Length: 528
Image (tube, rainbow, N blue to C red; front, top):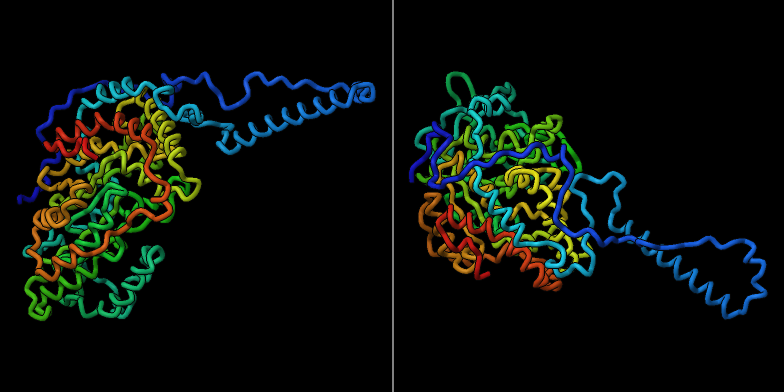
């Protein structure tokens, strides 16, 4: 398997994409949609007349039956008005709606055919899929955005070692000083904090002394499991850890390349304290210790120590580039991220191995909804949120390019469910703009679940690690599945047939393009 030298980030990957003009900035234009908005959630012609005070003085002249009837009617009118007010409050009525704010679907719209023309939307998606590949930024421009990152990581790594490692001078004069005392990941992970206690105890013994200076071995991940969420990345992470040549950090998802290095946690919180690259490198010190022992010949005769690899599995790495929208929010012309996470990973590590786990996007979205929504879940609620999200996406797509809508932070935050994460082809094509095809392994969760041994062997071959012993292979195969659906969520049952039909039609053009690029019809997901 060849390793890229990173000298030419723009590559021909065997697919032809045609150019479409970019629409002007979406926020400058009104939202247009073809959906029917004639129905409303509020009362249309509610006529509430005031009752004259004089009428109250003449109640004695009116029969009791008429008085009771009037009071019942008045009470009923009040209850109807109150129900509408409560409904508005529950739906989250906004006094300053976002440009993507659309009305929620009503119960009568459970059949999506009454609300939207899905065939027209699919045609629109198909017409915008043939776009010019993204213009890959120059390596100098990438490096200029984060000078400290590229100063901390050298351009070349140690020869004879499989993992991307190098020696960094340990400048502290006090060798007993705690090298992990300021690591911000220890505040987020109890497991890593515990690991730091063990690493700290052996830190001095793993330093290299040369010409009056002390050096520590630093390593980057050899491979990255980059996505997508709810596609089995957690289970794959834990099974790979059972291989004797694989050393993981103690945090499955550091989310450093997409979030922590900016200080970005989630859009509601904005920017928090940024995590320096040194904190990220600390996560892989366990592997560095083991590799250093192999270099020093102190690994109890295990000559394979220098062949150890490490990796990480942040499911946001493939798709989440929202931090750039906050960094460049003052620039109205910014419609797509100026840089993507893969630009930085490739710039420091052009030979990195990339593993992508995908799943039928219809099932992925429902699993995502059940996992991340904490209360009031139901198949009907999921259907309503899907309809709203499809409406929002169409409103954007009618004004802007496909890529800008997929990456648009405002749209993503406005959608009740993460519909854009299932548009796999957009992300895959963007990763192929910087990484060679042979450096990216794309898997299906369905194959992983049906043929675990075959799929795991494919991953091991891709990573170039040795065959497993029968005992380890049995442990890998028999390990219980990780991060499975909660019992309460399973009891909710499957999604509505109408929801499945809508999502299947919506994702069909994306899946067709993906199957074509990967030359594998299994990614059509016709039989799931």
